[in-house]
Amino acid sequence: MTILEKIEKVKDEIGVMPKSQENPFFHSKYFDINALLEKLEPLLKKQKLLLTQPLEGDKVVTVINDLDSEEKLTSWITIPEITDPQKMGSAITYYRRYTLQSLLALQSEDDDGNMASGNTEKKETYKPNTYKPSSTNKASEKQRNFVKSLFQDKLGIDLNKELAQKDFKRVCKFSLEEMTGKQASDLIEALQNDDRAEVIYQNMQGPLD
Image (cartoon, rainbow, N blue to C red):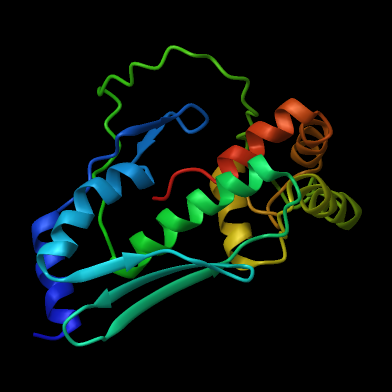
């Protein structure tokens, strides 16, 4: 049996992953790396597959090794430049889950607003403006560049990268190109506040769709 045939059997058994974790910013649920590994690893072991997730240079690498044939499947992603150890740890956890989900093309159940989270802790959140931008009030090039520089300097996130741009739109509900002057001003104000910037950072590392 090839490694792909074994992976197919694992995917058939694992089915759809439930979203067990609550994200207060998105008011949505997602599955975390521990829940994923708890369900996945026994299924991999059954097929004589070994999962490893080493750090190689500036990359988080997910590897599934076939102990019978010595074949392997690999998925990796580059870690952003981050100096804060806590933020680095959050990013590594996020990318471990991201690369593993991507490698196996795992599905997750739709968000269920009626499911109880059991989490009563309230956190400050950045709430972006939701009105539609028009051609007459878009953010200036200077504003967009300032937002990019704040994301890079304060959060270690390069908004010139496609993945970061997708996360930006998911978090802010508008893209850099769609961003209005008012939205840019509000975002800049939020990024200049350490507590609010931390909330934005954590949610840039937040749930996968």
